Image (cartoon, rainbow, N blue to C red; front, side, top):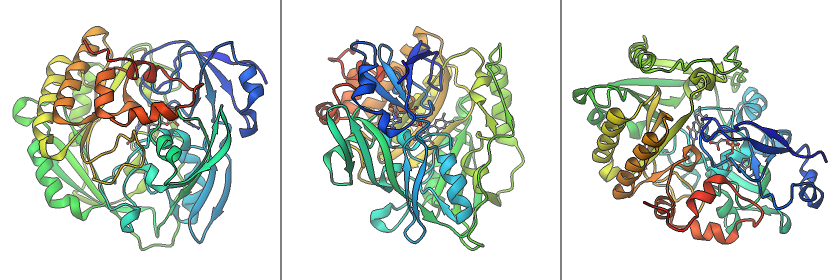
Length: 453
Ligand SMILES: Cc1cc2nc3c(=O)[nH]c(=O)nc-3n(C[C@H](O)[C@H](O)[C@H](O)COP(=O)(O)OP(=O)(O)OC[C@H]3O[C@@H](n4cnc5c(N)ncnc54)[C@H](O)[C@@H]3O)c2cc1C
């Protein structure tokens, strides 16, 4: 096996930017003692998916990342049950290129389809349907982990093992941030569909209060929902934007068009940040006012992944680093806490475009440290401007803690140990079963003895 190669930052937000050693894994059988022997002495390891996590959950400064992308083979599919067995380095895009034309869809998809199965499980990702009934109630909602039937895990201290719901290590690994071992294969339940079309309704929002009203009226009748809000709006229009609600149109010929790779891409970082305050204001206005029919039938690819049409759009940020701040706040106190957070971000931060609000449902979490839980989640991109930005995020963390909410590790580079340990009280169980050779920069920060200042 060749030695690990050093790369520049491998996370989506570019912060923290650091050199990172990476080892290519071509086959699951590459994982083993020979690979460990080829590592620099004392180096700890961590699986790498497709680097779509914004922060440091997928970074391992002093160690080595194991690049799982080449382990992306689709191994078996049962067209009667919809069970797909796939290697963990496959992206959701690659799965859908196979499954969609056969009339099958992944039940839970995030805002980009360029994440791997391993990354989707390790962060127990959610989509626009978390609030819909889950498999326990005959539905397709919940988080990604609700639809994982089994997974194969390689650890440095045990033979390869197959884990199923009910096994302790299964619930540690789903939402386990890559720390329990390398997910090598997974068996996923796909959903049969009659068409790739959705009936979409748009409800304009003049304020945050409108969002809660719209969700109370229309939310229960729709499987999917997401709101896009303008965080630069003045106080009297705080939360203005619109909410999109949708249901599958099931009647059809049982074929979904396959997703295609982006026709246009931003091939390298622009030499300047195209997402400057002026551009953000203009974008927010255009996005809010772009012509859309209130009720329309839309293609699933445009509905789920409006940004995936531009390859590597992150390069629009140019050399700028950014952080994403994603919080979930329990329903009962969501409106008050979100108003506080939005005011804080607007006055002190530099929110960029595409700020989203979603409802998360009350499903029992699959993973001990899964992020999705009952509440309202707000996701905001922020330009990284050094200490003031980190200080601002600490203030957001305080509001979230007081409200009994949580911050999403997949997006984070700033959460304190105290904050993480309160938001994820089962973190000690994860620490107990963590693979002793696995490590991440996120874990170094949040598992430390209380570092809150
Ligand atoms: C534009 C955009 C939109 C997004 N929208 C959403 C959204 O709607 N909902 C949501 O929940 N998230 C969303 N995300 C976040 C994204 O879904 C997660 O960060 C996801 O985990 C990224 O997967 P990845 O394959 O790129 O993994 P990476 O970022 O490479 O790694 C993420 C974590 O998974 C671990 N990991 C990766 N592969 C394996 C493996 N084989 N075995 C064990 N551990 C592994 C890594 O160690 C790391 O801890 C979005 C991200 C972007 C960039």
